[in-house]
Image (tube, rainbow, N blue to C red; front, top):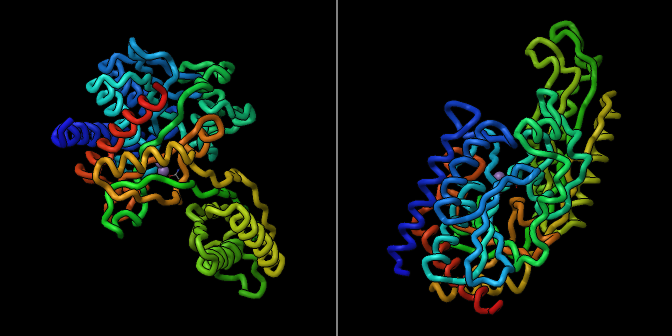
Amino acid sequence: MSSDCFAECARRAIAACRQIAAISEEPDRTTRRFLTPPAREVQAWLRGRMEELGMTVHVDAAGNLRGLWMPSAARGRRLILGSHIDTVPNAGAFDGVLGVAMALECAGIAQRLNISLPIEVIAFSEEEGVRFAAPFIGSRAAAGRFDPALLKLKDSDGISVEEAIRSFGLNPQAMDQAAVAEDALGFVELHIEQGPALEAEDLRVAAVSAIAGQSRHTLTWTGQANHAGTTPMHLRRDAMAGAAEWIAAVESCALRTEGLVATVGRIEAEPNTGNVIAGRVRLSLDARHVSDTIRTVAVESLLAQAKAIAARRGLAVEATRQLDQPAVPMDERLTAWITDAMAAAGLPEKVMASGAGHDAMVMAARLPTAMLFVRSPGGLSHHPQETVREEDVAAALAVCRNFLERLAAEVG
Ligand code: HGY
Ligand code: MN
Ligand code: MN
């Protein structure tokens, strides 16, 4: 295949992402949560592309859309490619969806080159964890690691995961059938880097060595709501001031701990009005590091600091954990084949850790798993100006072609 062919495939993948970005819960920005109506529209759009590729298509009990191309000459063991189609609020067009669009291009490239390798493409239903504060629902099911307790979680409208699955026309009791074939050759996730590293080195693509571990908590600070004008400062139990002191502590802990990132991205105050001292504040903690020990020690220290700040201020603080996801190394053999494929495409064999979480970190529990990153211009992601360059996507697809041929040759 010529470079023009890869450029054409890249243009098609980027155009798909931009069209899908317009399918949203909100009129003027991209927001697409787990099993909402826009998710069904995106599935219909992708199903069309899968059927054009001659794939057999189904939606599993967790709402993952799955297309399987089984070449007649193939003997059965498949490669699984994919990523997620849900988004954060006010998202960009490429986080997750580019991985699905590129996976479909890979299937087309394999067909064009008669690479006799069965390929299953999965569009995971839920990676971000926005609707139910529980990420990776789709890939947990695909990895055979679905926890039935997830079915009970409720969204802000009081709808449970179980009800959301049923109203999408799916059977939550069939979750076991969502697990991917255990004899699959492996899972590879194509994804934007979502950070500044590749741009800083002026590189188009990178393989991934490991995905950082993640801790996600919600902390609820409780004080005493009172009149902002009549309550003397020394008589206050101000939940907002206590939370603010802790948020500053979170930032300084991350600044002094090499490789740690920690974020308070969400805050809700009650009664959330200017002339009332906040009686209750609920906020999020997201902490990540490639070392699980450093991450867990830092989180424990931050939770202890929260208790100390609350005690000194006469507040109560309660922490609930949503996620304790260990760091996950990628499969060395698949990653070596990817870096070989990069070299064969004339690209530097860059390998880097991922600060962002991905479905790959869940799928790795079931299959040999690897990732290929595409540069994020401006290092921007989880933002409407998230973008990619056509020539980087084309380069990544040339790497994929080399990788597919290597995999087919290795499995014979
Ligand atoms: O938050 C993450 O790391 C991913 O984008 N869901
Ligand atoms: Mn994301
Ligand atoms: Mn993502």
